[in-house]
Length: 415
Image 1: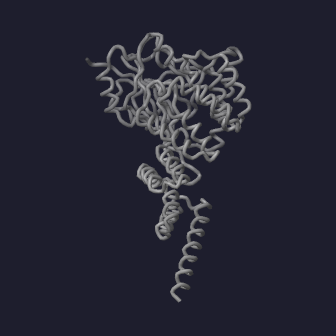
Image 2: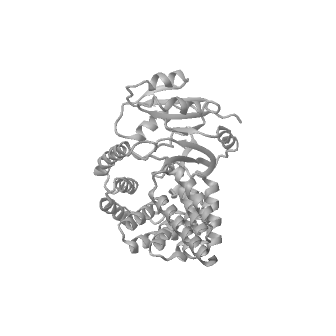
């Protein structure tokens, strides 16, 4: 049966991003709806030149209202919601997903991949699974003035949400720290405004707590987590998210006992997940309990290989796979299981050849087995990637000193 796909975008001053976004959709979209919320640049002209239908919405501090206005203009059977700073990577997978849709499915999770540059000059890919593809229905609408979502309205229709192979690339994190802070302060303003009139709204309390976390205001975040957890329904998916981010907040406040309590409660709700295990693993590592840290990192890897749809919907925390391999290798290195540590470091390097941590990890192994030339070569490769990473220079010096010492001893022995 032939279906029609409507793509919905809300935008403001996105002349640099919008054109490429629309181009990535051209092979699968039957119509593209662009709702402009007050642009002063060439956003509208670009949208029209690309064949999009352009509508105007007077901004009222609610992302949900703007998105719902876009939905009201859509005439397709299905909606794909995408932002101007995102790109559809695999339109064929999107077409295949809809070709195989059944009536009981109300929405599909899309993997959104964000590439983030580190201060070591490495490029890490973070992914999250977001509900961006769903049926077009008058009673499926966004809720939440910011970090808006359609999950609740799909659940009320007793429809299922499942995973999909559809992928987006997200460019929105490639901004300066100053721009990111400005964005978080805007979010905080909107959340404060909403919570003032809805003080017991768990979803927005957790979103405000996460915003405080991003701004480094951990004590303010903790107040919101405490309130949200006191209000939560034990069966509400939002509780898992509140517990995990609350555990992360307690961990950053060095309250390890509270962090572990929250993480363990989260695991009682959904046992196959990465987020809670990550927090527990990091705490054990900090306290030099390396075998326990290793076990929880392994459970993260199991969850990565056997994803839980419940946790994907609730919002899991997916660190780049090369970082996970590095943490597994690092734990084993401290346990003197050198060979197994090397296997994980090599897996991390294969996943991302520009990951400095895995290269340095492999150099540590070479150093331990006194293969100094290999250690130096690995460190020189790492230095090319991260020339300003001072620890690499210190390690190279340490390797050189150790090698010269052994050569000196060998020379004296021969004499």
